[in-house]
Image (cartoon, rainbow, N blue to C red; front, side, top):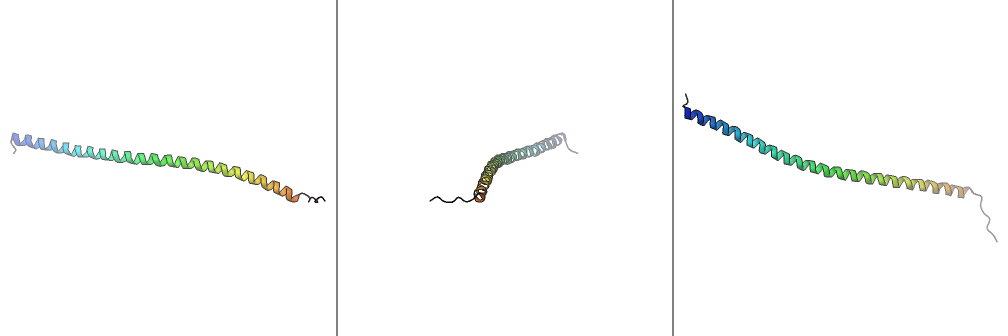
Length: 91
């Protein structure tokens, strides 16, 4: 069997092995945390752009609706003028 010194060295090697694996695992988590932070930042930027585009689209839609209302009013007035009896020129 192992002597006491060999057992201590083996136990120490196991502890160091576990510590190294845990350290690498934690370093990996930090890398993933950085990647997630980068991805979240990009998503936030995209969300801001999408919200801005949605607001612009809503504003454009309102402007288009107002323009359509004005066109409808003009069309109504043109019809009235076209249907009105013709004036006879003076003179």
